[in-house]
Length: 351
Ligand code: DP6
Image (cartoon, rainbow, N blue to C red; front, side, top):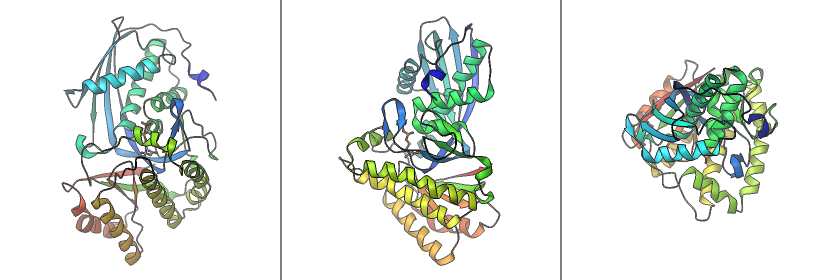
């Protein structure tokens, strides 16, 4: 598969049009950290797409007006975001030849709190890419479900790498790996018949340890992998981790899953600490929570574990099978105190 497949080749008739789309966020289990030119990932990644944390976007297109973009986030005009989207549209015009031939008003809102520190770029670019493919279908008169979704994933990747995984539900893979059909240009759903039932219904409660802007953006963090002496070994390890992950997902080995997922999270943050300049996104509360989770697991044997994205928040993972009452009580009584404002976003993955 090459980028040629995604070049815009159709005939288009442009007109005034408003489209609305929604896209969920996702949380990686094997992490994408490090990339090459044109948003090609240095290693494959796999994520869970969330159910509740979403971005809802409405895009209004005014045909045959000079190209410009105006954006509103939760009703507030956001000039910086508009500049970012303008740059993004210019960057993808070979794939959507009509894209610079009009004016846009984009209104977007997240179902999760704005200040939460939960990454909105995955759901945000996912929703924008879906809106663009919706317009593309309307202007060309051709809508092809599966192909259009794949192109939306391809376009979302060019906005933010992890966004390409948000176009599909459940477990999703991005990057060339031993998973059938996977490639660097877009994400694909993990083969459905190779997933044990235990992984089909999972809780992800996000503890908001630190709300607000993080000190180093993902884009800068990815860049620092270029000079990280451990980067090559890390990329190789992530590729290798697809071996055990595949087996674990097929045979329902929850213990193996916990070990691998926590290892991936800690490796991501270890890479940050070994960057030059070094940076640390975890906060005191992050470490307190991790230690408490480990002590709880040792004591009770219950399957509560964590992953981290590029920030201080802790994603608490545990199966959603009706027997998790003790885990929920523990979170409320022992872990919530380490958040900034008793902040927790309760999400779930069901597929
Ligand atoms: C730690 O997708 O936000 O969440 O491609 O520069 O937009 P850009 O980066 P982004 O990086 C996500 C990094 C991560 C791991 C992951 O989601 O796989």
